[in-house]
Every structure is written in C-alpha cells, then in structure tokens.
Amino acid sequence: VFELMVYSSLTNLPALLALSIFIAILMVMIRSWQDSEMVVWFSSGGLSLLRWISPVLRFSLPMIVLVALISLVVTPWAKAQIERTSQQFEQRDDVNRISPGRFIETEGGARVFFIEEVSEDGTRIKNVFMSQRSGRGETILKADSGEIRVNENGIRYVVLKNGRRYDTSEKADAAWRVVDFDNYELRLESKADQAYASRDVEELPLDRLLRLDTPVAKAELVWRLCWPLAAFNLALLAIPLSYTNPRAGKSLSLLLAVLIFILYLNGISMAETWVKTERVPWFVALAGLNGAVFILTALLFVRRVWMQRWLPLSLIELPYKIFGGRK
Image (cartoon, rainbow, N blue to C red; front, side, top):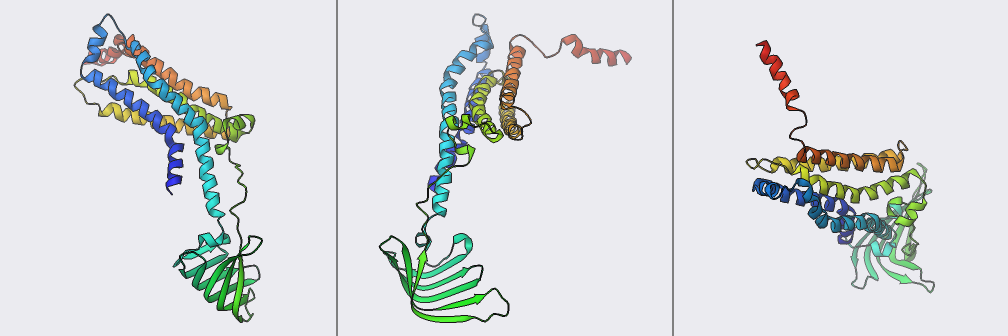
C-alpha cells in the first residue's frame, strides 16, 4: 500500500508543483503590496511591474523544468509501476494469497479458501474449507489438515488429508456425490512470472508516445505538455494578479488564485477530452488553451502598467450623467 501511495503521489506532483509555484509567487507579491513596498518600487527610478518578470522567472524556471521532467518522464513511469504492482498482486499464486482466518477468493472468485491455522513456515495447514464453481457444478472440500508441496517440475500442490468432498451438478434434480478421502492433491496455479506488457498510453514513455498517431495518444501528449506550460503561465499571471489594496486582506486574492487554478485544470481536462474525441487537433488544443491564458496574462500586465482602468473615465461616468441629468 505504501508503494502504491508513493507512485500515486508522483502522478499528482505536476499539478501540485504548478499550484505551489503560483501560490508562492502570489503570496510574496501580495505581501509587497500590503506593506507598501510596491510604492517604493514604482518610485525608485521609474521601475514598473514588468521588472518583476526577471526575478520571478529566475525563481520559477528550475521548478518549471522539474514539472516538465516529472510530467513527461516520471509520471508515465509511476503509472506503469502502479499497473505492474497491481497485476503482480493479482497474479500471485493461491498459496501466497492464503492467510488464516479469512475467506480468500482466487481464480476470479470461482474458488474460495478458508484455513483456520497455518504453520510458521507456511507449509502445513489445519481445518481447510474450499468451494469451487465450474461449468458442471460446484465442489466443496473439507479436510482436517494439509501441507504444501512442490514437485520436481516446480508445480505447487496442496495435499489435503482426512477429508470429504461434495460434488453437485447444475441440474436441479441431480443428487449430491460424497467422497471421503485420506489424501487429496489440489494443484495451485502460479501466474506470478507472467510477463507484464503495458497497453495503456498513460504508461508509455515519451518517445513511444510520439510514434503513435491515435487520438488517445495525442490526448495524453496534450495532458503531459500542458503542465509545464501551465506552470510558466501561472508564474507570470501571479505578478499582475497580486495587486491588492494595502488596507484590504489577502484572502480574496488567494481565493481567486485557487479558482483560476481550478478553471485551468478543468480546461486541461476538457482539451484532453476534445482531442480524444477528435473534436479538435491536438496542437490546436495545446496552443489554444495555454495561449489564451498567456494572452490574459499580457492583458493584465497592460492593465496594471499602462492603464488605470479597463474603460475610459468618460465612458464610465456616462450612465451617471444620463440618469443624473434626468433627475
């Protein structure tokens, strides 16, 4: 379980790092506005908000590279490890899955074991119950004891001793057949050595993913490439978005930042879905989403650096003049 938790954390790390970069830059910038440090900045030789881009990028670029590395390389590897570990657990032989005091299902639920006691070395068992269903009917075994053996070919068996076997047919009017036995050998299928082969594009390395020309592969490529671009856009977006009144709190700005990240995340998911369903080409989805956020960032810079308001003052005051004149 701990191993799967570590792999799952790696798959979620690109989004968490992008959000962390965004929040870190935003909080520092908000603190500068609230402490009136930005007033000193603007009055120091005519420095503008654009001069913050260079230090912000110096801080965030190593993290953006890390996001790209994790998104493009580490995440597919972690997903492959999750699938491999899950398959290995499902393919473990029946002996390794048996534990005392529990009903254990094997072969997709067709066989059910219950063992009351297992020796410390795991080779001897006591009070065994087994139920197995097949196309011909159901078989129930009850034995006082048993042991696990391995023959010369490496095949594992459970040898049950002093027990009884009940056989029934699928026919409703069929009678039960009861057989008492002194020794009963039951073969346990071992599948742990089966080769693992990934068929999911989420687990494919980048070089193999680029060679595929399917909508699913292109959608996965969009998902991986979006996160470093999102981290870059969010780092720049935090600069103009950090503006706040020194007398106001910073909760509203942080709430807005979380809302923007959620919308960005939903946009990435929508772009992936549209590419997967072949509604838009993959490069259009990639450039359209991230380009729109970049344009929004540029507009916010224009608003904070050159414009005092989005609309001219005369146009803003026009409704007041009209309604004021009527009165």
